[in-house]
Each structure stands twice: as structure tokens, then as C-alpha cells.
Image (cartoon, rainbow, N blue to C red; front, side):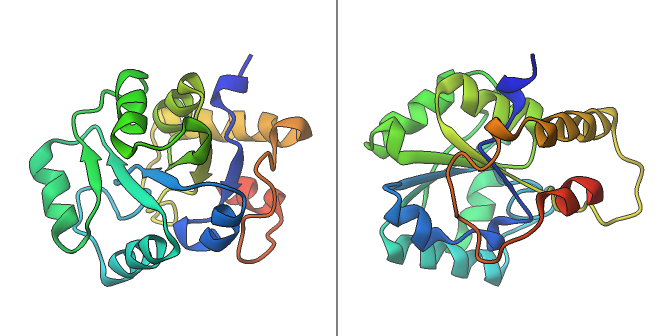
Length: 187
């Protein structure tokens, strides 16, 4: 019932991913969400994110930002990053996921999506047939009240944890092994 919401992989952050391993597995393009995936909601890119994109590009990846934000917000984020983008994406609708694949001019099987939300990012990628990675959303550790969606996500991730056949579908992609149970409990 929830399988369209299950990510292929679930990791701590974009910095926990070994991009060289992904490249060796045959991936050539990465589509990223921005807010709460790369930076806190509404914030500009950081030096660490700028360096991450430079490293990803040096490996040989093409990148594209797929965001429900407007173009002004995305261009502000891309100040020091050279990447394709699609704004006002209306995720989880599949239209712009598939447009992103065409813009990257790479086979869909060679592209993966990285985002922080099950109901928009992962659901849209799954409906579009794009391999995906869920990252723990930035801002999780703040002692702010979580929205209903984040609480429902926590329940779905526990169900995901019980269904081993949906976990680790990409394989060994993390810089360090991390116990999935710890990630789910902390979310």
C-alpha cells in the first residue's frame, strides 16, 4: 500500500552518500530537491554545498535542481553552482520529473533523485520511475513542532524498515555504514 512512498535508500544527509560509488554503479545524473535537502528552508547555498556540487561535477555527474520554489529562489541558491534547474515543479506530479530527464539528456535508468520528503520528492520520483534516495530533512534536530506530514512519514518509515525487500535497492552507497534503525528512530 505504501510502496510508492518507499525510497530506494534512506541516509543521514547528502554528505553521507559516496558519489564515486554511485558513478561506478552506472549513474550519470542527479536530480536534487533544495529546501531541507541541501540547505535549511529558504537559505542560500553554503560553501560546503558549493564544494559538494563541484566534487559531484568533477566525478562526471550532471545535476539538476527540481524544486517547487520559484525561479528567483533557485537562482539565488545557484549563485556559485553551475546546474540545470526546473522551478515551480508541482512535485509530486510526474511532468517535471520526466522533463528533468529530457533536459539532462541521460537515460532515466542512469539518473537518481535525492530529496527529503516522502509525499512529494520520493512519491513523485517513484511514480516517474526514477531511482531515489531519501535524506533526513535539515532542521530535524531543532526543537520545533513537527507538522502532521513529518509524523506520518515517521510511521511510514517504520513500515519501510519492516519490509526489507524495499531497503538498500541501490546497494552500498554510503561513506560509512550506518544502522538504518538508528536513522528511523531519530526521525
